[in-house]
Image (cartoon, rainbow, N blue to C red; front, side, top):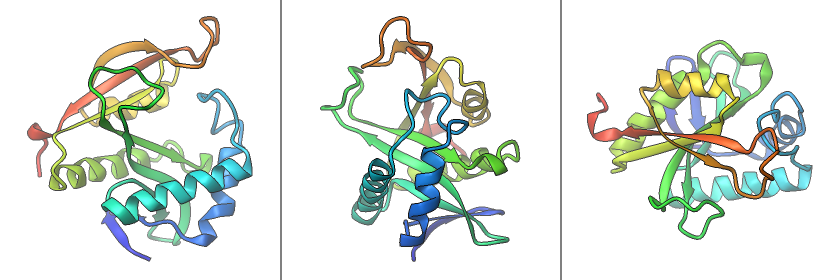
Length: 184
């Protein structure tokens, strides 16, 4: 196991085999996925975990598995996702890195997403990134609050691809952070 980032309470590390079942369970939880178009199958979660780990092992950057130092318990993920030009998104700024997080409900409201994401931004800057985006459904107030605590500013609004105009999650907001002004 390789730990890439440590904070006061968290370890951000590569993915381990024992992370798979809790990751699958988290992605099948309607509470966790309420701002996503659907739940994820166990097979899709396994595919996603393998892709996330490949990116970390190849680049040293990615969506890291997160564990609580106090218990060594797995909590979810926090990190950076590379959004390539050939993605479903039609942003002029592509390619770019998106900061993201997904944690188990048992730890929501404790500042862990913010704590981990702040450390990821500093890590990103040390790895030569100059800017980071984040996006979510306009209705996802918890994630939007984290983005604002990170000092991110609203960049634009857009319709999420693949969702109909009347879908409740169609309207999305994108945030931006210039890492050049980030304190070390």
